[in-house]
Image 1 (cartoon, rainbow, N blue to C red):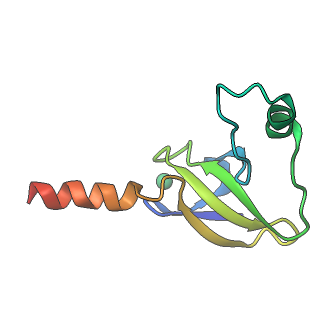
Image 2 (cartoon, protein in one colour; image 1 turned 90 degrees about the horizontal axis):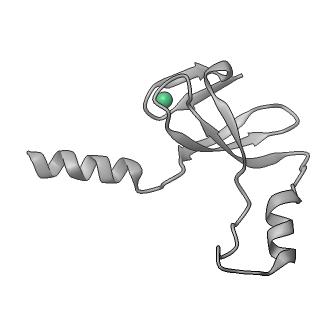
Length: 98
Ligand SMILES: [Zn+2]
């Protein structure tokens, strides 16, 4: 399986580390809603089809990526930075320097 890192290009999956389900939303850290924390820690989707996942290019640029992978075919339909403004922020800094 190949994952196309926006910085490094297509790389073998062995260079990446699975970081978990990309659909989870962390409860407010001050929250004492145990059902919400229990769901955050233990509940997982197990879809037969497209699944949002977080991967880190740990053997490369170490960037965290949001990947949409089909769990039946392993086809990857989307790769984006976890922090959506990461690339535009870097581009903005480069433009500020010029
Ligand atoms: Zn990379």
